Image (cartoon, rainbow over all chains, first blue to last red; front, side):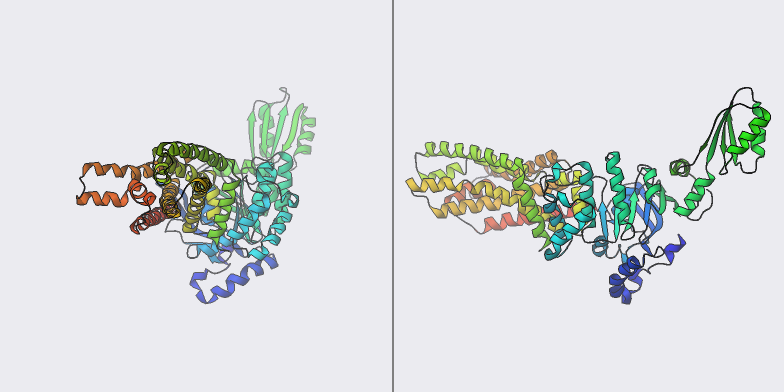
Length: 356
Length: 244
């Protein structure tokens, strides 16, 4: 969170810098590949639908060139945040600032929206048009000069590995290719920020794998904010995660921090034959320094520990004559952590590697 | 190229490759062709009478009032429901550009339907005398009033996310402009109250003036004002959607 404060100063407070920075900052950030300068900075963003508060003063930042997973349960505020970032919805007046690629979205939404490409959850493509017709229309709407439109369409189709689909009617494409065309549309005009809302939804396993590889190729050249319910996907693709729940940011941290948490949250499952003295086993497990907690259900123990306990338990069982029916390590997943983060109303500390 | 023109071109492309448009066109030509045949029989070959009979009767008004809601109902409502409108609007295109392009595309398609009837008049001119002036004023009326009905349709389509509801609402707007004429039965000729009804009555404009070769400047001024008003309201409705 703190890193967000070191980035590009709000341009409206530095009007002299406006013209120069608007042109050079994105290229400087993108060419250097730095993960320190934030590409998106949000401070106290609020959004209210009628009397329902969808976003309750959220603040977070997304470093340039990073892939950030934006996760939360349904109705948590992910799509609402995206809709503000694309300028489809105007935030509440008390919002402090929303900066995209150095452009203040609140004071200059027209420029800010050109810095963002979006692949929406609900992809509505005109089935009656050919892929090239659709993309040429979109490039015109996105103010790509008409002389460059043909080259730009070829570029984005190549980027999503769909060059051979150029003359196909959109309604004859598979879901996987439709999703690629949606991504190609988002890439038109080469926006530095890409917002991807449930990008692999509705795809079969092969298409999902191909689409993830595609997103991986975009890493570095674009700043990706990825909303997904598939936490395995987030774990695989993202450098950072931002957890939102009930319109509030619950957690914001990088891969290193959450990997550390996952290690700490690993479990062992142990089942012994009924001949073993359950109380003795529990007492022995509890006194091990590397064990965080032990839960027992008859002759089944669930042990929270990030250490390799297999050998220790095996040796002890041999020594005590316990018959092991099952012993397996169960590494923690982002999914289990997510349930922990969003399961209660308590708010986990934002940023840092501290345990919530 | 201007974004409005780019969007207009795409709308026209989508309209003319859509099978629904061609079905509307064929049905329209069948019904209006039959109407023309019946009118020729009714007026006994008097081409001057034929114009006001074919373009002033019940069938004409039915087609005139019903087709615009069908043409415009999907333009904003369906796109909003499917999410296509959001994808379009987040490119920075202005609300007014979207509204104008949608209205222009639907008006062009609607006017194309009526232009498809012109060859019938070409055939009739081989056997009788068709007055081009009368045809011009009649088609001007179809253009003014039809465009205003399309603008109402765009407004209705902006107000709701359901195409059928948009069609119903648009039809209600149009029928109100049609029915207002019947308020004239409440007044006697010469009464001042009758005048305002005549100024806003689609029936009065078409039947008593345009199909008779009279082109009063107040007629296009009224309908163009109505077009601007409807498009302005549609723009405001779109704008309001951004305020969650």
